[in-house]
Length: 243
Ligand code: URA
Image 1 (spheres, helix red, strand yellow):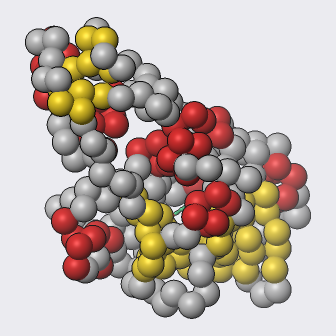
Image 2: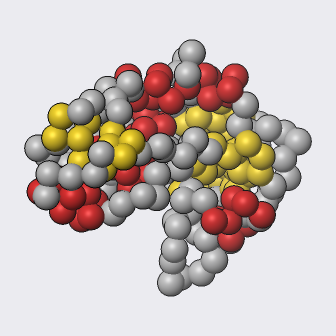
């Protein structure tokens, strides 16, 4: 089955998002084209740039069919020290690791890892996949390995499993904690609140000193990739994001 059709059937994309992700038109440009009646979907003029598209939709601008570039999916072993963004004034971003043809592609990171964090990061040009992975309602599990200082409270597992409330009053979705030997643990969350894993461990009495993302759903970081290395994901790996 065409992977992209799977994403789109699961999370229908808006016309303006699809054209922006493909690097063709900004959202503003799409709005203008729509208001001028220049965009059609399946032969009918589009009335709203926010229209949600079926996987089979045929888009045309001024009568010419729009061919969307094939989306790209990279698995990166993020090293510490780089920012998860497409641009930043605060330092180099993960995109600066890319070489050759990947440098000019409209790729962006799927979700965030902190600057000091390492591990599995997907880079893609496919907004539908990004939403599939990052939307809390999709409950996609992200598993992290952490080392920490301090002693975790006895009921830490239950505290996270019940859905912890952060000091600012922010309610988290239920998370899993698995203690490992020494001052290490695995934490699994299904959303991406700011510094969520660090703040959950802090709530339990610890202070994270190292954090590495191990997996997203059933998709795990390729152990052959060293920090800073990346490769294209296989079709099998993409399917794992659907399990
Ligand atoms: N939680 C964190 O605290 N940091 C990350 O980078 C990811 C999840």
